[in-house]
Length: 569
Image (tube, rainbow, N blue to C red; front, side):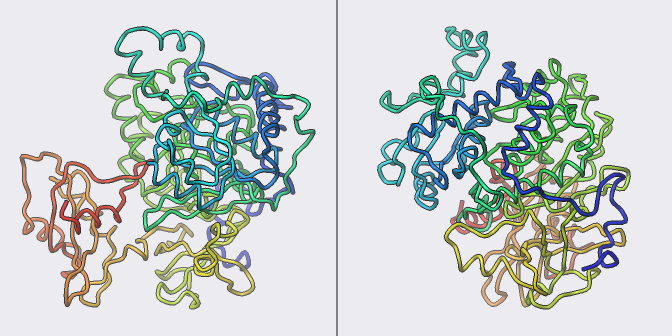
């Protein structure tokens, strides 16, 4: 590809380069550079307890020495299952400092899910939240873990809040129950391990190269069993640099306050809050979970400027702010991803904050951001946006990925760039399917069907794996959902395909109603859809539900909806 075939470059925001240089360094170097430039700036704020960049580096060094002391070596997989807290940040960078590999897990997983992923990645060491340790229980014996360390997140709180947790009042008991578990006393605790660290074991410099594996990040599993995406130091460094130029933070280091409400075990939260934010010397306000009232309380004390989030978070936040009169005018940007952002959500956020709601797109396999809307008046809510600097996009026939189509035609999106992963952990067959060579270049098949407009901005039509084929016709669930969300009685919807006999599949819609007392019939739903959709795309069956199954960050899990329908639930 040359510049004439990249129409998106003409629509970049000012000062965003079309190409970026990726230095041959490991992920930790950017944090060390921030600490050197802004030693006294607060790096983290967890529930009111701050730690500056100098203190953060010292704590990471101590943690690296402690981990080295128990045998962690370069290339070892170290499983981390923690909520967002200071210890999560410290553990993440300490593992990378040793040249070992971070394997992130959802701390709310069940025992079976934890055992499965631990065995898949072959982790010898695990740093688990107290509650996760309790959930795993005796299951650790069924894994390859040789040393389990348990982390009490309440130890990261300021002294005043630690004292409050001991009070015999319901609020204190609820907070303590949310943060703490009761693991077996024989399990080594993280904070005790740090206090006993032999500081002579502190690494004298980085122990990883840019092409070494930094993280194994499990995909969300929306289309099947989660797989471990292998991300190198170069992948992560590249995406932080691309993002820093995209937002303008590369030219305004040491000025942002980032609200870390996205879970760090998710690729979106890991990059935006753990690597990007500390690269640009931001202060990261950490939240163990997203709670609107806690968010607004923190906003009064330390106003935020940058909010990585998913659209439902923005909707809840702006509604509550308008209800309470909370001031959110300090926020310059919200970067939203993981699902399409409704125009109303973007407009509400921009009205309440005066800042911009910018939609981006990516996958765990692209570290994760590959496209983004420009950070100016040319942003388009509902669109994926423009390919990032040093990132190429291609459209291919959705039934034959070797057939390259003009960018103006609809087809599967392929992306190529320094942030694209090197494959799944121990999944060579799947790697051959998702990573393809075209014209001597490696491309990532996204599985998303897109269209590109005249401004070089891409819009997703649907996921190939979730496409419904009925009577030989292809139905894209998101198109049916988009129409149904406009129906006055409908609050939210998920559309899936289920076995339909001779038709192949039939279209089924699971609906959440705005007013359950105001029922809708299948005939009404079909009449509504019939105005804009082809007859074969009309739902043949509807279910009214109280809620839809969602991932940890709020994405509707169509796969689970389909399973529940087939199971008669």
